[in-house]
Length: 334
Image (cartoon, rainbow, N blue to C red; front, side):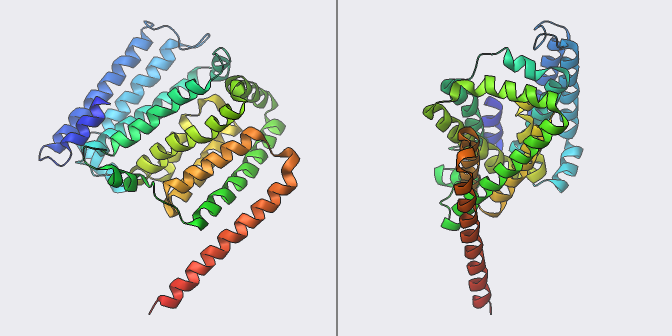
């Protein structure tokens, strides 16, 4: 947080480019030292049966890659691909943090049996979920410069938190149904082709989220990730890092699925949420995310017929609205 606040405070200064390199170097260096401590075995293995050396080496390699990517020549090359200002310290820090997050998560999944490790932890409570999700929101609003470079209204606009049109809500709800159907299809495929991994994923998911199988818990699962994760990933990061990179980052934080078909499903759903954000706003992608989480949590087996009818009605309303908008736009074009 101090680095994020500092980056926002020096943005726009004549020496901002130098500050970008310093902040990126400090972050990469601290990450490398953390990896070295892990490699030396000072902290012990991250989980029973895992290799502290392998995880530490992965983190150190990640830190080196982050440092290289955020050097001045590389920042300029990356800026040609992503919507980044190579001299903006906020953008530079966002890039290095994104690389570190992704590399660290990949190292964790590659060298630790995260499914077994998650089952050794206590089930999540609502308070745990709140503590887990709130940092995403804090990083998002601080990262875009709330009360430093932007006031509250400007921050909301930058993050895409706006009042959606009615058709954007129907689109979000309809997309949630499509995502659910896709997720169910991938789950079936996973059980058919990789039953062993699918069984472990199911057991881990049930253990981790089993304590939230109450009305309050289900509401928390639906709302908290939808607000906090969408505002960070789709609201703050996607406009700078792009659709695909943001989807990869979003997928990387869902380590509870390890390397499985479910991970692929999360990536595809992240792309779908990103498209909703791109063509509408973050409010709509949050509604879609919350609806999807709610449907997964409560299940729709006994309400399948109603769900199909509702999905068709939402899709029809959305298509009609889009057709009407296009027709009105064509009519007003000289």
